[in-house]
Length: 419
Image (cartoon, one colour):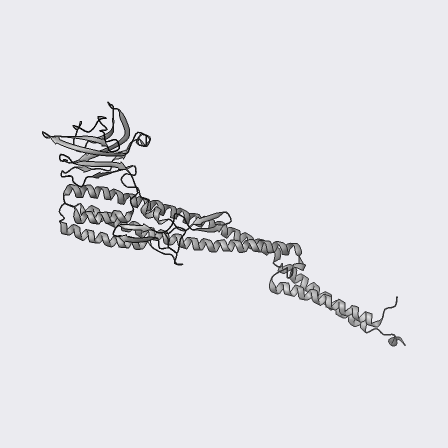
């Protein structure tokens, strides 16, 4: 086969270009720190790097969401802490208001302080986060949750939902709470029933909050949960009757109210049970102390919801308008129970917030571990092995020099050298 001089030159140049290209590729790998410069270098590894990089980006977004959720929950927890402090101060004022040495002017000053606390609470209930979203408006972050139409009359304008943030592929965290659950859905009394003295009472009788001994009996079908304890005083003897306000009959006699059947002793238990006749047992007990006057009465009704704004307003009104020590004591006792219930409810919500914050820490830890694993996987797939690359660079330099020298030798051949 005859080979032309041009073919020799073209072949030599092509060989040097190939060796130069390989040398440049190794140089680029070393300078970039990556083994895969283009998908053609390793199609399988390049596809895997793309897949892992996408997972890594999603994980980074979850980390960003986690930070945002943590900021919102930290602010909510701090706000709930401020609310707790405020309500504890309100309760301290209510205890101080029961001091018999205080006069009406002193109590009016305490009432003014309570109205200031009321406005402070309303402001905290309408708190916003860094993004301007209300903390306690449910899903409706842009809606101001609470508005006041009259003293003690506060309407909730949000909804019952909780805004959620996706913090992992399988977990969403609530970063807000419904203001209705935090400030309004608070059971009054002892949570089962609420006791209250009639405003017209003239004696010194004071009723406690009572207790439910057996919830199943209290919730029995025959229990109407609406009663009046009415007192009568005759010949120095005080007696009472328990009247079922639904049927209108005496619970103790089963007939229309007449002469009170039970003798009253200050501080003794008043049980909602009787061996009979008629026999009944509603599993509840309360106590009344002091000396009720003839005709005084106290009500026992199933617990309802009392919002904390009305509780504080009622407390301020009580301090301004109480006309007797017994009325003041009964009012303070009932409202202090409601304040305790509000504090317990805030504590429950705060505990829930803390649990969510703790879960975020756990999710963040898992996410950080995943981020490290993704980085290690990508590194193992595409990062260059510097020792191997340096050796290959030397090898490619030798190959290029050999190609160059061989080309020089071959290009110098000529028949005229032998003539």
